[in-house]
Image (tube, rainbow, N blue to C red; front, side, top):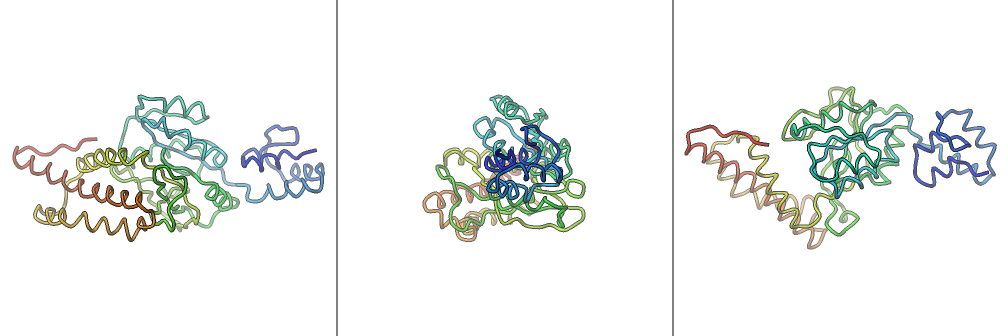
Length: 320
């Protein structure tokens, strides 16, 4: 007789592994039922069942995604979460494509909510999650098998930390793995929402930890931010305009003009050398150039808006 937990383990579905009895029905995991299953298996399968019980999460986990017009990418994001979390929440801010339909077909709970801003939208989504521990990914991000295993191991018992930084590694168009030695950025994406939560900022999606220690995971998630470099160029223009419209600079105009002169070369050095896109070949060079352009454009749009305000005599209105 083949142990269903071994089958579930082989299929990399740890939720089924935790909740499946010998008849294939989902039941709560108990030591007694697990021992019974072990005795009903052959010696070789018994070992598989034992190994499948290791690092079974004792903490329930919610996953959540905010999205708008992400029909081309939302499926891969949800699929990367399904074997890890106990529920998936998708907050859609008014998609006109098949984002909502795809998410529901894949088993996610979808809530329609008008756009509040980056941090505020994620804070709203986090509030819909049933479980104390939550994992946030964007529609263009993927949980890797290595990251899923590490999260299961951390949540197998009550963790010492209340939140975890996770490496978010850029994947260039046409590639499936990061460049060598990626150093993109770390973000808190896995956390206990009873003591940590997203800031309601319209500009930044940052988790604020009120108490407790923060850990760091070794495995990372993959970030596919654009389908092509043409797509990236269009995206950075939209985002630069949006962010420029949300804020005023605290610098005096002469200092802002000075910053405009140095922003591109400084940003390029940061992306190309410090963040190791130099190891990404031609795609790495393009990525560093386009993202340096984004930072330059953001300042240019801010200066342009303030100049129009000075000429018209009317205050600039934030948009988005």
